[in-house]
Length: 378
Image (cartoon, rainbow, N blue to C red; front, side, top):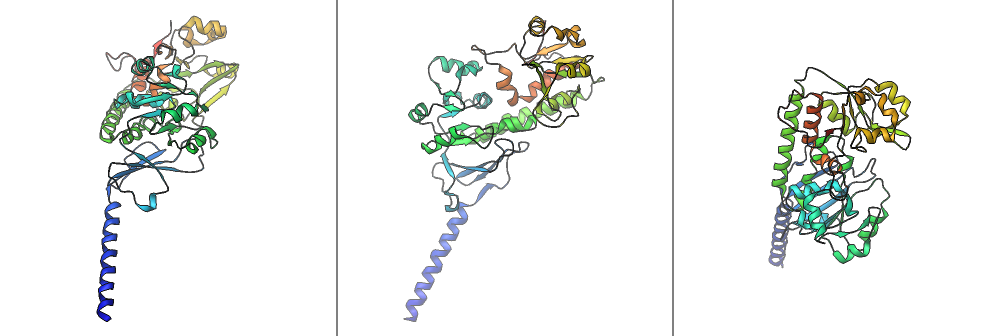
């Protein structure tokens, strides 16, 4: 009897040991550190056979954190993570809902995986427009009212959505229909490199983390090099931004993404002392009083000529920057259906935006460089 008890106890201890060894193996991290450097809204942690993506700030003051498991073939997910959404990677098809997602797919050479998008006319990318013309990408309606029937028929492996607040009934309904939705908060990042780093989010989905890291490293290197070049400038010209829309002048707040770029290009943005990452809404008179003698004017992109500006508001002529024809806009580069390229690509390529602004404000720097997004209005 005692012998049998000893055998049973030995077998029990053996199986417990094996179970512990297996669990240890499942939980082994390849990289114990978050691989994201600048972005505050997400993190990536790589384990043996799977990756955890945590999205922390998909919109301002988000009330919860979202976690997703990216499962590799034959990967074993620990029981403690079974409640999280699982997506098999590398994915073969995708639906995205913001034009800012498009450049990441292109840079990773995965634009052919895009099978659906809301408001196709907003897309500027030549490559993706070719796919749209070939009927390879479905129209999904409006962003806040995605066509659920079409999406269920498409059965994408993942839908990349975004929200403006905690109320996202469209995305909630898609998940209730059995579709997998991941939230992306690139638009809520507060720094230029933070926005650009979301390419790593897509890299993880396609099993291309190495490629995504290399792409971002190049953007980061060029961006930081341009900051150093801008420091060589001997002047700090004053800058007016934005323009009138429906009786209000909208311009970036002092700690916003755009304001940071102006400061790093060695420009003196006249509303740099304001706080916040959104837009200021001011009267024409308030702006004129402060910025009448500004050296440069970076418009919002509504206009592609000085005449268009004065047709919209003849009082624009009162600004010195207008009189001296130092007005710049990104409105000139559009897709075939009118989408403005800047809105799509600029958040992903802050290195190009910073080079443009540095060249505009300090033409003696970056010799030979031609601005990519901006052009002087005539």
